[in-house]
Image 1 (cartoon, rainbow, N blue to C red):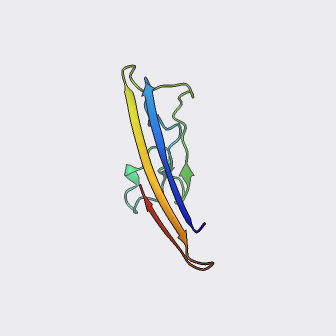
Image 2 (image 1 turned 90 degrees about the vertical axis):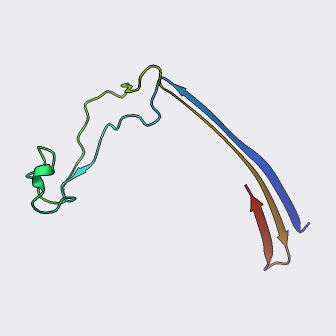
Image 3 (image 1 turned 90 degrees about the horizontal axis):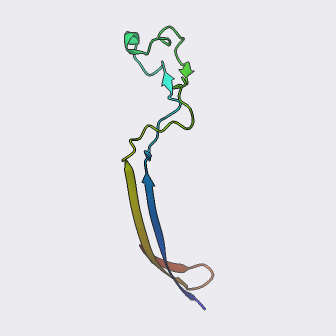
Length: 101
């Protein structure tokens, strides 16, 4: 009644062919307040003269269906997690718990 034992397993097997798991960002944040004074020449053209603190989210101009991966690219991820947990209640105020993954 005061003791509980739990055990389980989590399995994850993921295969992806012909696509990049990282994708291509449709938007990238460019902020002109990340540069020190005198470094404006390193800012992308078009935001050099904007007031400090303005953020710009330019579109990359690609469609949602665009795939930047090569046809032979693939990824395979396999993950298994086993766990065991023991709980013991001493009284209403005290309990003990130990877990192992």
